[in-house]
Length: 117
Image 1 (tube, rainbow, N blue to C red):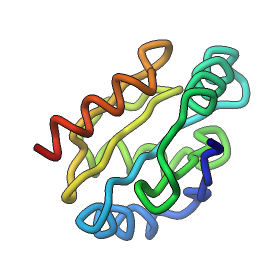
Image 2 (spheres, rainbow, N blue to C red; image 1 turned 45 degrees about the vertical axis):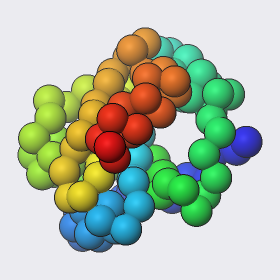
Image 3 (cartoon, rainbow, N blue to C red; image 1 turned 90 degrees about the vertical axis):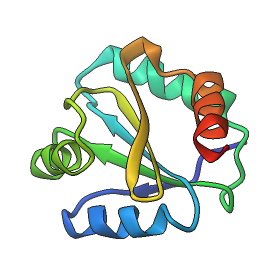
């Protein structure tokens, strides 16, 4: 199943994502087109993806083009900035993050189940 990415390009969107996360989980994927590991992580995430668009909001953040937004995401959700990186946002806070080759769909799915329990 394909991921329906929304571009995360403005700092104002961060608060919107935080608010949306009270309705359904939100995933932020931080990507650098200059990094081969980012391409591998993105491919693996997209290849294993099984969530339907109505189950989770998914946001794609290009950290090269939108560096200030990326830093604001790190600050808002109190995580160390990395790329590639996924942040799972639920009820206004980051309940899980992973970076580089630790980004695995199955782990993300398990962490969501734990956070929703």
